[in-house]
Length: 515
Image (cartoon, rainbow, N blue to C red; front, top):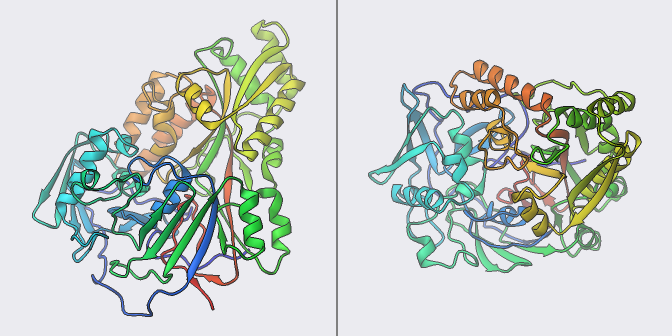
């Protein structure tokens, strides 16, 4: 399986350690020279296909993977994760430093950066973008919860004041396009649902729910782009995208079903790229609804499930069982797996609770995700053996989200895009007042550990705190973590210098088409 060379702009890999727990007065690296890089003019049109649709082209509101995949090429953030150690590197900010108490971060912006509308980037644009996110409670707002002030000093200096030390601030400012930088007044001057004005390597030339056309922005501050145009088709089914790749109508597809990997690997006109992702999947039981408020019931389910069997049902070779959410290759992974598969022990745990048999469980799953449906079917079959009668509820994703948000479920299969930092895995989901705590878990000790860990500047101490919190989360079965998935994409051998991103971001800035 082939993958291109790591891109300069947004390379991410699971590796050693994130450089998020910065010590006082730490400094970001130099960004290199400003301005265009001499080289050949962009050439060629890449025809790309992915499943889904774009609901909005506003980066601060984008919620679907399709939307963010397109917008990753149109907008930039202050910093970006790069390299095998996942350290944050300069992007729109060329360097930064923190105060001794960790409460003030000062960013120096790169000079000579131009928006697609011809205006020049300055500090006021950063202030505007972050204020818009926070005031509107938009997608990136939770990551900016500790930001008390964002002040521009001159044209190229931005000072961010925090309510408490926030070692993962760079993660909040660079891990996703939902904190992209827009020009001042963009939401007033443009229809951001259908228009985009970023500083990224491509302009948004045409936009629609099922198609987006990107054209090279030759004034981009970094190397590239090398493609003149990217024509993105958004199709209803992954199978349609693969068919288009096979017959040459497109040269890149955004996802490959696990069941197709073996066949594609035998085909000489297709190259595959695969990487462990930062995603995780879990079975979430509703702690507000009996009998799942009983810890022994949740533990019985945890013991009764064979995660390896569930993973195999989803896709052999593309799924890794994991009881703690954070992937094994991450520095933040905690090697803790207390639940050994034992149907007899699970049945005894249920019997000790004194519930009538069989125990009924509704299992809610979004119908549009074939892998999730296979996982749900495997879960249902396994739990039936231990005396749990599962009723699968495969429903449209919009309905699934509405019921999730209102706590209207017995149990649900939940996929979450993790982050580089453990805050992105645990805090919103397992703190008592967490924004994504749909299951109603509240343990004061866990919440205190998570709060302390989020503000701890010492890397080793922070890891210990998150390990302690993770143990409680797993033991209490706040989520019953199941597995991590791989990202698998495919493309024509004509496409060069494209890399599969573990965070599922799509970056065409370094890609080239061979004639």
